[in-house]
Amino acid sequence: MMTLDDTIKFVLDQVTASGATGDAILSQNSTLSLKVEDGALSEYKVASGQTISLRVVKDNRVGTSYSEAFDSEQLAAMVKDALMNAQFTKEDPHEQIRVRDIRISPSAESITTETEIPVENKVEMAVRLEQALREKPIPASAPYNGLSESTRTVRVANTLGTDCSHHESHYTCFTSALIDQEGQQAMHYSLRSAESFAGLDVDGCLDEAYSTALDLLNSEGLKTGRYDVIFSPDCLSSLLGAFGIFVDGESAMKGLNPLRERIGHQVASKALTLVNTPQLPGGSHSRPFDDEGFHTNETTIIDGGTLKTFLHNTKTSSFFAVPNTGNARRGGSGLKVAPQHLHILPDTSNTTMVEDGQYLELVSVDGMHSGANAISGDFSVGASGYVCENGVRKRAFRGVTVAHNFYEMLLNIRAIGSEAQWNSQRTLFTPLVRFEGCSIAGE
Image (cartoon, rainbow, N blue to C red; front, side):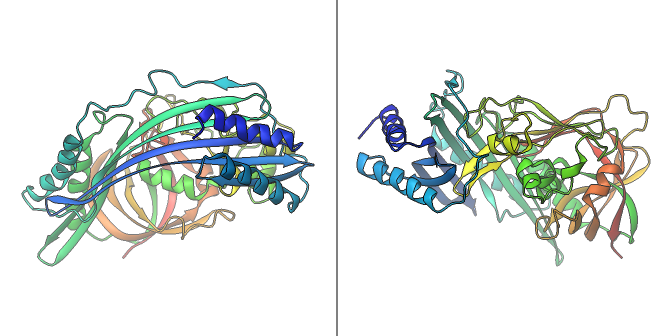
């Protein structure tokens, strides 16, 4: 069996010998998944694997292939398949291998793993999540409850001398508190993630799940009308994900991004500044290079309400003749664009307090992706949350429908808070954002 260095060299030498250019992504993954039911493990799953994904460019045609086998025969077949696939694609002068002579190695700190933590401690934590809910004054069950651990090493190399490696680890605990009392039920799901086992906020995960479920159990109705709304960080992340094409250079290139012609124009409230920050401390997607090996850099997408740029890879930046932002994502479906961490900057100068007066705080939304039209901006989703006044939760509600237009919402931001926090997946770092006049269908 060849070493990883030998594997990369063998594949890229084969590509070069064929008269093509190319890049390869080598990924090694290991995962541990624990699930608990009725005080005992219902799932203990350990998995590991490695893949190599190849992209070749020859005569302005792109072909891709991948392999899970690393012997020379299978690797040679993978190169042959990629070259064959390229023959059947249309010419595209914009997708080329362009990242030259970039070399990045993982720091010693990033490859330090917590091997000293016994797996029994991880099992104990997963069991404690469920047991703590059962011991509450009003006991709750946990239909979904557990812990996961993942480590990944990714290496991106190409025929132009680029060779970049990165190692990352993630831990996640999750639980769902289901309370059943006098024929009434309510459930809330909570998750916490961290870069280390010790960094997991287990108590916060438990408290959020149980207290929210208990509040929703005792919820009241909400009258139909228009309300100011603050989305929790997780709900706001879901909203931004459903309309992710608005920052996407690939969608703009294809004519699908409704903001394509709005570069340099106001598309949001002047209070909004939206940044893609690749290496944000505490984030789950921090990496010094993208899936083409290009350096990742902070990119201001919206500055004071004005659209400054979309996120780009080498292909979309070539198409629009603009700088590459280092946001290439390449998987089985080819070259894409994706943010690392979206960061909404706090508004410390705003004279309107984000929690002044009455508003709704949404802590759960259902069907965001199925109920949203990313091109038109319209969405209609189920939601639960709280009626709040001057920052205080007054009462809970559930079973309402929230409807609005995303692109109008960006223009109708009433206020943005002064302190940012992560969503549970640590992909969005945001202060509270208050949107005016959302339509709520309730009683």
